[in-house]
Length: 382
Picture 1 (spheres, one colour):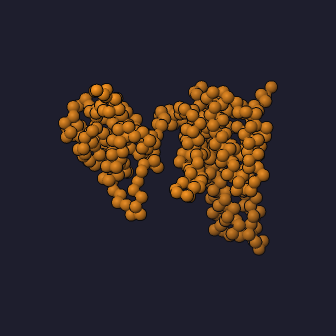
Picture 2: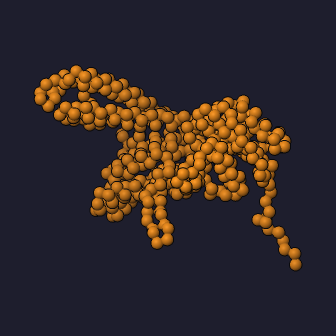
Picture 3: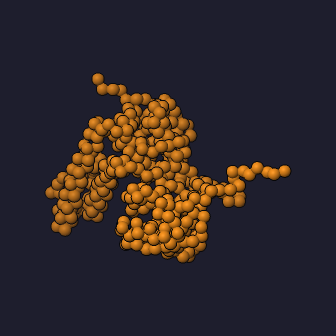
């Protein structure tokens, strides 16, 4: 009796040109192959040379005997070049994947050979496997639009300036502490005058130290003015912008404990992504567990941290604030029941778990309007 062939018994091999990019600052290594074929070819071109890139693709088509109308599929690792190359390839009608570098498998030998030629060949072989159906082979980066990417710069620059301001204040404190002077400052406040400062023996500041501190104070003043200008621009954008990110920001700010900083970072990093479930939300922030199990050994290695560090940092800050501002919420009650009475280390572990749960709750509130259980909204100003 003849058996009916299953759809899984065969696959249709498409005529397609595959290309993997190994990017560096001065040159690009391109590895070419065809779908279903064993022939491979590599070529090196100058970095960011669009004309040379087009010419290399045409040479690859002729080398493999492919028609000019054949489709091209490419990939490269996410890194310093960002997404401009992806947009260029899309404009050239080339399908492209931007790959998370940390998800690419590597040889585990202590001394493995690593060259651009081998890396390009490895990336090309993984692209062929991915096209063959191995969807779990690597992680593909979700590329934002040009406008979405540009809108993130404001809140990221604010966070960068705040960190620089903190480093500057700590440097001033350290310089004064070296002479027996304790500087008391809070919330970005720093010295405005050095005239009244006396070192350990009651004498004025040494000339070299005074000049250096004056330079640091001038730098602090410049940073502070920049920070105030950027925060004013951010607040104006929250009030006046009509895009989806601004709408989500205003919605999140209705919750107690969520102010401009947390709402803006969440909206600009999350609003354009299409999450299908809570696991994807936790994975984006790197707040997912990393179990280690081998034979009889079984332990938890902590969170993966393989995600957006901007979201992860603000999520942990929001979790601490949430405990104070939302004491009756279900999330706060869960934390208090599980971790509040434990050791300092256990409470820090608990705050990471709370941060992940809070991110998921904020995502549901931002996208579906589901207010976190027991959470209070801010009282509107009359």
